[in-house]
Length: 91
Image 1 (tube, helix red, strand yellow):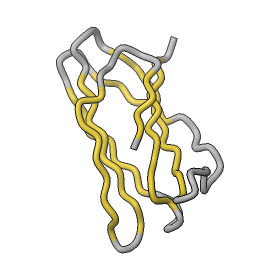
Image 2 (cartoon, rainbow, N blue to C red):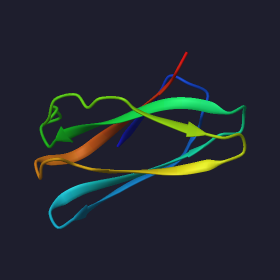
Image 3 (cartoon, rainbow, N blue to C red):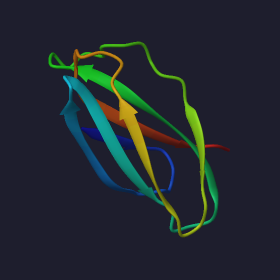
Image 4 (cartoon, rainbow, N blue to C red):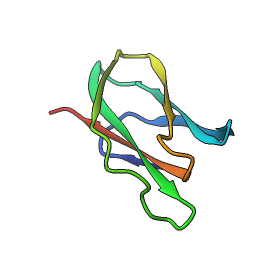
């Protein structure tokens, strides 16, 4: 499990579990600064360390000042055994 950040919002929690043979990820983001429009995506990784799917599109989300949000992701294939979470701030 890896988090990649290119913006100022901290990831306060990241966890995953296998549910019915499919990897489910949960990431909590905390915004302690100003209101932010950010985008996120998951990269699903197989046991060999290689991506198991094409790159996901960026998904936009707004997180107000002082708020936190939980983002859930479900792997599109049972071949995913790990994930990377990427967070990017809109300019």
